[in-house]
Image (cartoon, rainbow over all chains, first blue to last red; front, top):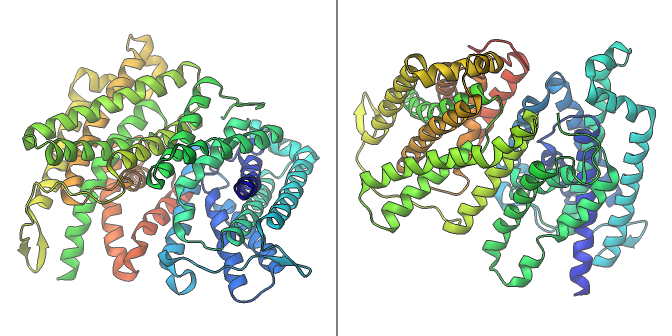
Length: 289
Length: 290
């Protein structure tokens, strides 16, 4: 029971980083990014591949964020002019391409077989091999991520982001380089998704492309919208609720072949109900444009 | 003749994508948002046929008709219970997009629970030996698919140009406010767009179900391909969507000449990407909004 609780808390930590980084892009900058899971995937694979080649954890961890961030940076250049549903589709296309590469570049990723035996992290001689210590590591990283995102959003840079979301043209008129700011934002958002991916890979110790499909986007997107756009408090609350929400299914005694889809159904249903009846989520300041 | 075979494969893939894309483009042009759950209408119709014909053992023709009716009711129901409610409170097209994405995942998971993850075959058509044209092979069913799609596009074209509802649809697609001023109820037209789009989706589902196997996620994949076709051809233009889908079908099948076949799906996205970047209005579309 205790082990199970720790497992849930670790998941909450990883989802929190993932959701808060998506919140930065969707809620604050108004960039409807449907390709967030791709950055998560890039982070997970980068970290795993480095770790399996014997590099120390801190290097794997940082490079997962940096490489994912780099991809975010690169992706933002071509999609910079797109908005709303077009942006959503272009980023979703990106996510499918990354998935196809993970599945087909077998000499690097072993394709559908996945990468087993990813080592548990160790830092400064401390090993995080048991779940409790891993939880502490996750909690610290999640906390730091939240603080950084909070710092970004309350800084003048964050205000410009919200201005871009509300009226990009007006922001440009005020002399802000919106192109550059959006690029940075997507890069930062991808960086955090990447480190979440690294944590995930080192926690589960096995990754394969099926963990990074479009289906995985639903819970994260759900958290962002239920928590409310541009609200960090809401995101944290929604992460806790949504990670715990489908857990009772496990205890009802459904077979695992039903639990998986049932989880997705619950997330999808919650997302629909929120959009229908409480479109601003818990603490949202604005509605989706 | 490898080129001829690729050409035929491209034509078949294109016909299937175009069936998906035409319904999607119709709904997009009238309602102005991306109806992702269109993919699950297709999957539902295929699974419904499987249920009626292979599980219950009903007559095949009767099952087909029921499946198409089911698909149209499904599309109508989604519009009525979800999209209409969202429109009532003036939700943005991005909100509708997310809602339709949630619907897609919801119903796909439902199929997964109801029918299981294993691949199903309808098994109406016995595996027939393909006909040979100069060394390229095409099965009778594939010829039927291509022909059906052309007949449907003809009917759709006639419907949009000649009937009262078709004209009203084009009016709403063009300018909703003006259409309402002259007495066209836009909500009613939205319902019609969903019904007709879903009938086409239902037919597409049945044809795909007969040609390939059924799997719960088949809708997402087809939906993405259909959507890519829509973007290539010009969003909001039904003829453009059909043209774009055939181009995509050819591009994919010629692409795997150079690339491993696992990258077939990635080709679609690269094309989608290129068009979104350089010509977001597509080949035939007009540049109204991006």
